Amino acid sequence: MRNFQWSVAASGYKLEEVEGILFLGPSVPVSQWREYQPGQKPGLYRDFSRIQTPEDCLNFASRYGMLRDPLFAEQVSRWQGEAKVIREALTAYRILERGDFEALEEVVTERPAPRTQPGAVDWYIVDLESVGGGVLHSTLDTKVAEGTKEGALWFHLRRLVNDSLKDNVQVQLQKLDGPPELVTRPTNLLGFMWLQLAQEITGIRQRRICRQCGKGFWLYERGEGRPRTRRDAIYCSGRCKVAAYRKRKAESSLPMDR
Image (cartoon, rainbow, N blue to C red; front, side, top):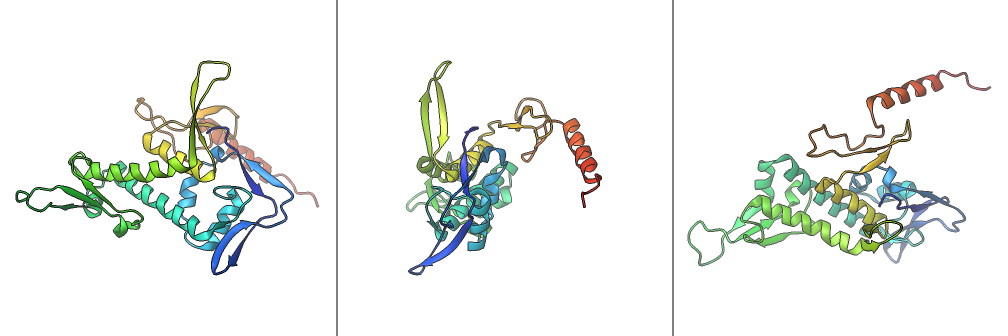
């Protein structure tokens, strides 16, 4: 995950309609590629979740590359569909993380089964269409949902994430110099973004390199009795943040060559 690299075509990208279907792909011929590490792009999945139009898809590809294979064009409608699934997962996660019970009542409804005692609830229906989702509807047995609306929404969120991880992420047992290690490896950029989202949901800490001093620091510190760092943090401390600001200010005051 940390060393995952992806490629962006230096020639850029274009939208092209073929037999009524709009495609997005690299502008050919592609003579050069720009390699980068998506791990240095905090919250990349959030940027992708904002995609709505074909132009949004084109702008994202120009910055970060294709979703599944750097070389091949993809249908724009598939990009829009994937972005909508991530938006739905993010919406469900925000409701659960914030304890927004008003929104929970809106997206999870009860359906009594026939021939049951009055007031008994045998099914929950999860539908996020009213809050901008609606990609996938879940009808769940109350036992699967642990008997609560919150449990029903957690089940729905796990279903969204797990289905996407299954298709775009590999889990391998590796052994190099030390003991065997279980490695989670995205097979493409889409898988990387779903792993990013899954890590936020589970609270796994992410290690990042400080842009000022070059030292590593942990992005999340949940449940350790210390304040949690911001998701978009790029400096390991306030001292480095101030030092970077002073450096930028000094550089901006230098005379420009004529």
